[in-house]
Length: 63
Image 1: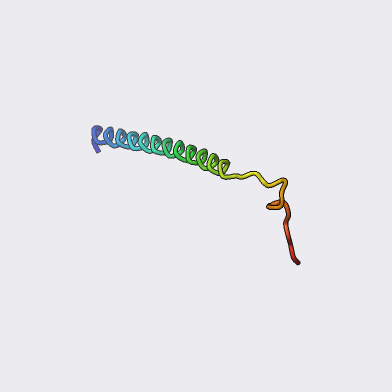
Image 2: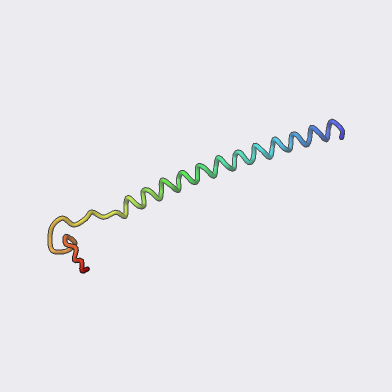
């Protein structure tokens, strides 16, 4: 194997590793933003419980 081919192999390996690192970084950012969006959606959906009135304040159970 000549020196030029070896240098080209090393350069392409480093380029591929850098591209993979960039892809992983973008993936982590996307997952973090989706986690935040899901948490905001769950917080927005939560409704307060009833504390007075005839509806929603009693639980009827039968054994």
